[in-house]
Amino acid sequence: MATFIPHECLRAAPWKNGGGSTTEIAISPAGAGFDDFDWRISLATITASGPFSCFPGIDRSLMLVDGDSVQLTLDGARKVALSAAQPMLWFPGEAAVMAQVKGITTDFNVMTRRDRCRHQLEKITAPGKLARRSAATLLFVAGEGSVLARASDQQFALARYDALLLDADDAQEWRLDALQRSAVLCVDLFT
Image (tube, rainbow, N blue to C red; front, side):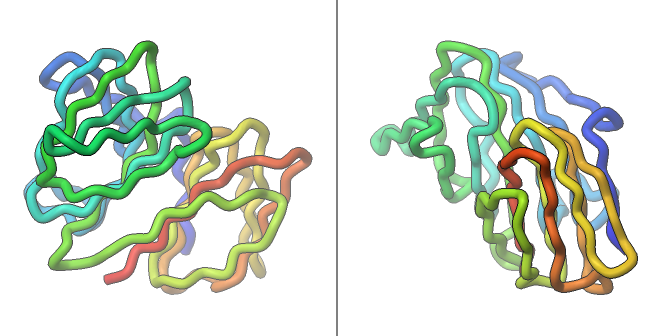
């Protein structure tokens, strides 16, 4: 059965370095911590420049969902600017990442433990259709406006930053309806 995850029920946890906070959206297995999750999806609000935490054995994807841009330096050499023009980045969790921000940014963050599973993150647009490709799929409304996700006998109204976690028992095809075009992030989780 699909699980609706309203943003208003989630709580942000401050980072140890004081440079931001993370709001966990979903994790597997349920109740797992940083050392034993298979996958973890969250929102990160960056308020100050500084280093990212190191996660050996983890593959990560970041997508900018709010704010002008964040400049990332990976392993002291590769420089990437997440912005509206290039909002997404994939990188290994063991990379040394330094972030520079001029204002507050919010990033959608997907992490998968490399030896247990993998993920694919893409931006889709509502209204439209979703054909699922994996046993677990998370939909996240990144844009303004509400999205109605429906399939067979299930229907969910999602506002900005709300999520919907679909498992293997849920329908493979979903309709995403919206009065105005809205960005929806789709995470396929492969185990």
